[in-house]
Length: 430
Ligand code: DGY
Image (cartoon, rainbow, N blue to C red; front, top):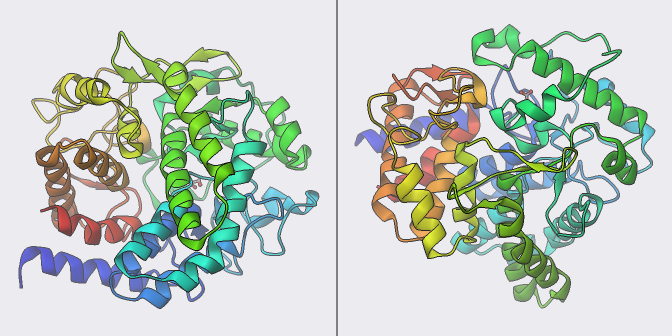
């Protein structure tokens, strides 16, 4: 059996091992509930060898959808655990929109629709698409209404957890501007399972918790959250994933014979504002925007390459992103400082840290999203290099949550589901 075939067999074992019955845990100890974008990728992985289970994964996630369409970042189902925050902490029952299932009160990057389309393209599941289309549409509509603060069609995030990149240095300034007062008593669960040096700092956690407390006092009312959340940003990663997901939703809608004018409108609106808001022409990079401070966030992280996944840059923007930055060993490319692609933060950023969560480690999800974008723009060799590095890391250090880009050491959660799922995806790149 080849090395890749062995890795694929191990990947399936991890996905099966994390199966909790109704859903799949992202990690067996650290993440014992159902996370939104993890779950989408888990379904994609499962679809390679157990399509019914993949579709059930998606149904389980949608069972946590709020009445107004919001798809929460965590669905707790009935599993008891030592994870913090637990369901009681969110107090979602304060909102008339909350579902019967216990969930968090915030959302996460909307990968799900694109995954549904990818699965459907691989093995047609038209009946299933029809079943879930209304829920997907409702989630996108919620994002484009409840989270559009300025009529640009670009959505706002109210919590770093919504970006999926919790302690990214992109959020340092916005977080520093928040003074957490009367932080509710809490005890971190994450550092029970993973070394503290690999997890966000205490100062971040105090603010993570403080923000939840603000939201629950506002009863998760969308207008109040937009008006009063101390953290309000437009994120390049989230908006790129949404743009691609809107395109995929539109394609699914057309196939089902549904009206798609509303979705076409969202796409046009986003396209006409994306560059003005995010593209920094002198730097040749996309930067996030701090809506509260009304200023761009001039911090370079690998999420700057996500518009490639959405097909948004023109040829010259794509060339600058790739040739000036992705291939630059002083920023992202392997060289004297790092051995593996793709460090999540530019090596030039003072906050770079090769072992701490989103401050520098390689994440398989980012490698996959960027590789997909690179292929779209014809950079097939670079996409293959990302795939090879990802497979090499998983082969030598196992299916970890993230990896040190210098020595390839595995970090964070062990037996991490989306790494396993994406190992199956990356097989077709090499
Ligand atoms: C965590 O617990 O680390 C998550 O990223 C929050 O969803």
